Length: 432
Ligand code: UGA
Image 1 (cartoon, rainbow, N blue to C red):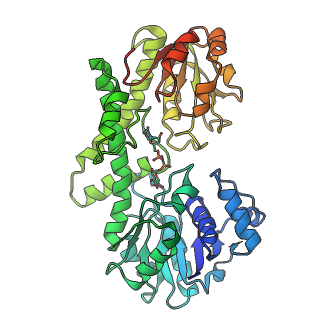
Image 2: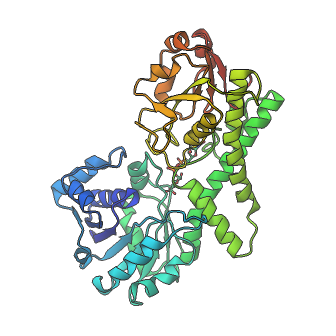
């Protein structure tokens, strides 16, 4: 059954949800306070680089199933209203609920009786229980429906989710079933649970991914010490269905707008509940150490000593975004490594297919031409796993570098091809 869905917030989650629900046959009204963003969206101009998103927005606008507005009053008539508001980390690392606490009270009197209020943003445990108070109404059913969208794959993940999570008190209520029905065309399994479990499950999933990555990053260090190859070890582990093959590739550390924020939020929640979630705390600590480890590897490659001075050394960086497929620099390990290298005196030139500059970091010269990063370089460092880096003309890079050595923090490149091009390849957790 087609529903009229209201979406509050046209950010990354809100816009993806709006466009995808329109695609699934619903009528969607998307509200945002940012007038210029709404003007753009009405003309089909999408500023978020997500594969397939602009096309879905254009289709929804053409079909008349998707509308954008700044007028919250247009939410009246919606059978379900999805809150897609930012919950960024506050200064102390706890989620900042300021936007939610400002916007939700404005909505209470605008929603029609029976309207289902859905939290889609990642919210701390207990938020659903607070919503009736924030709305100023206790007659509206509240459903938690956290999203599991990866940046760069948001549309694909929305339309083909691994699972759909709906939380209400009591579980599996008519409102929860109504929300779950929206996703029926995706065929995904539905977990219908209580509100607290749904809220916690989102944090638990992201924190578990962070733990898995920190585990493999330490494993990589161990492999280097023992002359083992982390790719062989993690391939073996991943073939165990209980472990699974995903998130077993070592790197310069995990980053982005979600894993660091959600591990921090979970740690604060655990602390306030008097529970020592040491394994998550350790994953965060290991992550900071991983970045430092990359810097030591670069020092070693350039000077022959892990503590050697980088003063005046020209270093070329390939990749700045926190992962391939996005230009997002938020909490990017690549940027953290660049900052440490700059502090150590290195002169940095960087190329990233999706990044034009690093705000606030004048020390990094960002260039459009990847070949410029090698000019007179004492080393190249691959920090983001863009596949196109594999296909660069490595012989040409070697010819313009001062020393043809590449520190490949993603194990992205083929060491044999690199050797043919004259490069010394230094991987992570691999044999020299
Ligand atoms: C993450 C989760 O994967 C999504 O399920 C979740 O919905 C989203 O957060 C969110 O909370 O909204 P995302 O932030 O897009 O998605 O990033 P990931 O794809 O999870 O990557 C996180 C970090 O792990 C990146 O820095 C990436 O480079 C790193 N990573 C990932 C590795 O170093 N190795 C791997 O094998 C995989």
